[in-house]
Image (cartoon, rainbow, N blue to C red; front, side, top):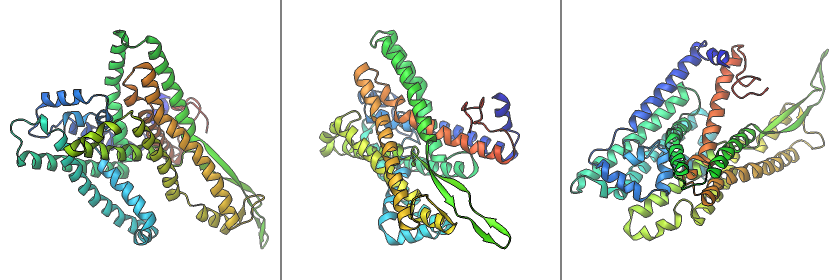
Length: 429
């Protein structure tokens, strides 16, 4: 395995990308330690201690601890994710945006610009809401200057993270935004594991549940890996055709459909979207009474979480995979699905298979999301909300995608695959 890892640094381009990603991660972690001016650190600790175990802890996990320090990156990339969700939805219903998407790279560049401006507006709004929520932690009298400073600092931090994530995607390894979220989650793992150990050592939690949590982690990681890598292969047969003395076609191939088309996107989108009403309810005094009803772990929160996961599983798949286009491409290349007529029947067949596969993927993602709440309720291990389920799914999913990208660079240059037996994943392709 170490020999295969050493190959990563033998390719100049890959080495440059890995080092760039590592440098960007260091910059992100340093930014989480720079507090917004005018905030009392001690008062802030008391504030988050009073709201422990709720959605604020969940939001803090996604920012790598930046929220509890009220640092420059306290909002994380949540505004950017929310803006991406909004424009993904609008693209499906607004013809002008749909035309831009069909224009290819140039149209996508314009949509990206709109998304960035929307991110700026959402960052200002969420920054104002978050400042209102933690205003009791301010040093001295609260005046307009404190609000202006906080909103500008938080907005600047989010815009910088958006830029950093895009640079990581372009010049580094993996998806930059997802990588930032994964690093933030991993940064909180040691602390939460220590809290769990302290609860078990203090006999507040039975050691049986500690062993059960480790076993559950192994099962979840294995299940996530299996689902992320799982494919449903549809047989495509190509008819023979003669051109001069040469015979083309007459062979078969497969159309692979991923069980989890969206990867970690549905979980990230659902989590980000649920943080908005929580911030709003806590920021506006007249709506404070609604906050407890949508706190993390409540029945309403779990139901909304699962529904959003199902919605984004199907919605994201409709964006990245169009059965009509696939059927058209298969027909134009002279292929067909055995027993299915070309054209519309092929598209309907692929769509039916896709919907059944997506249902399995959505149920799996929903189960992963709900599992920590059930386990935490039975065991009393509060940290399961933050280190189980969605967090593990994001970490494993982003890790697998990153490994696949590195493997593509290695295989393209005739190096041994990372996923070969004895490699990082310990399996054959």
